[in-house]
Image (cartoon, rainbow over all chains, first blue to last red; front, side, top):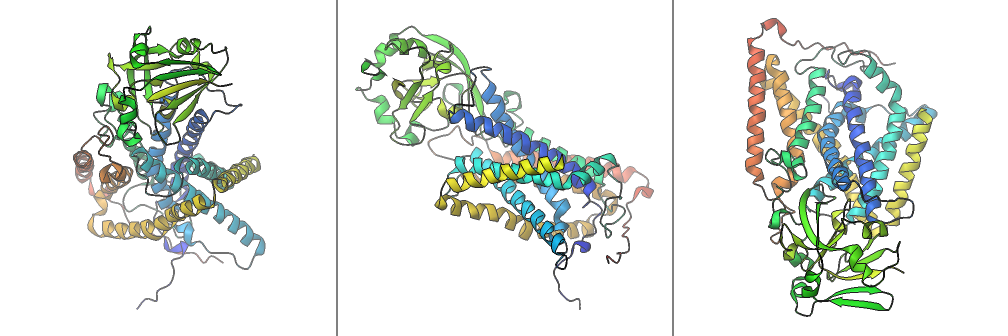
Amino acid sequence: MMALRPPRESDFTSHLRSPAVAARVGTVLGICFGLCFLTGLVSHWSQDPNPWFFVPTRPTWGYRLTQGLHVASGTAAIPLLLIKLWTVYPKLFAETPWRDLRRLVLTGLERASIGVLVAAGVFELATGLLNTTQWYPWQFHFRATHYAVGWLAVGSLLVHVAVKLPIIRDAWRSDVESTAQDRPTTAVASSGITRRGLVVTAYLSAAVAVVASAGSTVPLLRRVSVFGVRSGGGPQGVPINKSARAARVTALATSADYALELVNGDRTVRLTVAELVALPRHTSGLPIACVEGWSAHGTWDGVRMRDLMDMVGRPAGADVVVRSLQPSGPYRATLLPHSFVEDDLTLLATHLDGERLSLDHGFPCRVIAPNRPGVLQTKWVHRLEVRA
Amino acid sequence: MRYVVGAVGVLAGLYGAWELLRVGLANLLAAVWWLAGGVIVHDGFVGPALLVAAVVVMAVVPSRVRGPVVAGLVVLGTVTVTAVPVLTRFGARADNPTLLDRNYTVGWLVFAVLVVAATGVGVARRLREPAAADGVDVVREPHDER
């Protein structure tokens, strides 16, 4: 009878578990992580105004594009990561050089960086994927944690690339079927799928995963995206992220006492819904684009934000604080930077698709501005304050 | 060059760790399970399960058609992982019918049928090729590593 012992790296003989495959799948995976990270930063900084990241108001579809890419690159990374981890699985059982202190320290550090990379990489892809469906089976703060762990993932990825650079370079310079870089116990030929076949299958899986989900933001793909989180439909042709019921604003938004307050210091103008709707309206065709990767185009009508704030004498260059009727939540007050306030396209919208806004779209009025995260297109607005 | 990339990586990672600590201890403790969980689930369950799957495929599928069958299984398996949240619908809310507004089970069946069909085409093409194209199991003699 065979004695049971822990597996060793040399026990893994598959021809496919080779640096030739790992480098090819890993390079594309690395590009996906990089793209996902950068587009994630765009979103993070667009949501938190800070003095050194200026968010432009054009292109109007900028946020839609970057966040569509964020979710698409993250989705593509899932098949690639699974296949990449499979090809390097034997490394988990590599021998530890206990007798050589220098090698022991270096191996330990490298393994620690891989540990961080796998933990952070899986964490980012898993939490991001669940977030697209608003499924939050955890206690941590999603946005802050996803942001912090994103830095951990990219940091450990850069360390990993630095360590493996010679192997990656050699792998790309030789043929994918070359056995030059293989471990001694690796089979010299495949007994099934070829290395080229596996690499192509990995790229294909990533592409299929993207096409199967990207219809949430690419209208052309709506019919084929069988796993898209939103088909793009909804009241007045636009999906909803948070309903009036979930935000607990139904009674407040439909109350006869509702009035919009425009405030600049001690000057206050109050407008009833009838007065607001009677003001001159403009039309903006703008997307509503969510960080969760879905987006839809809408035709909005409303009063220009600039014109409204002129009613209380907003000085040029002043930002505006937008307050919602929502009794709680992180987005009940948001800051609209002056470049957005002054933009012709920025509206306090009262109509969508030619009809009065539905309650779930923000009745009686909502902000709609170009190139803005959906969560900052504040709904159920009741107060606009010039920030001193 | 390598050292620059590595140093930038260490700095980025340290910033991430600092950001993670800054959110608070309770948040960190809640996140640790999900951070360690990914490693444990992969290395402890997914890795071994795929070894078992490979043994089954090697035993059941003739080497001649193993290429397209494995490719089909990889596409089916990995893309299905990306569909877990829509298939399980845990995020669905009664007050928001615009979220998760498709029949994902039917979608998955259509996807699976397409993958099986593509695999079938690959298998049929393999079977029409001459038998000489069969893969052969060749394993090198293990070297003494010392």
